[in-house]
Length: 60
Image (cartoon, rainbow, N blue to C red; front, side, top):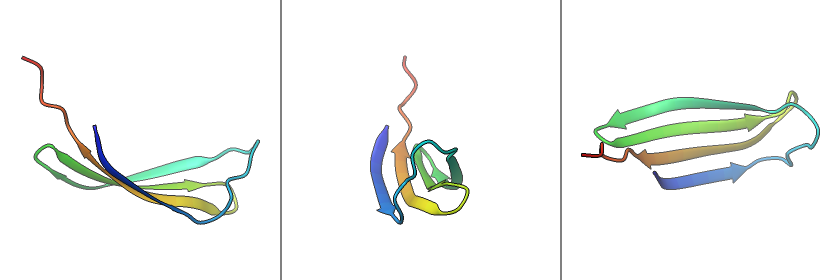
C-alpha cells in the first residue's frame, strides 16, 4: 500500500518511444519500504520520485 508518493517532473515525457523505469531500494524497516524511482527516455530523465510503501500484514 502506498503511504506517500513524491514526483519531480523534469522534462516532458515523449510519446511513442521506449521508456525506462529504474528503481532503487533505499530502506526496508519492518513493514515500511522506501524506493527511489526514475523515468527516462533514451535522451532525458523525464521524472524522478520517491515512494514510501507499507507492506500489508499477512492475512490470518
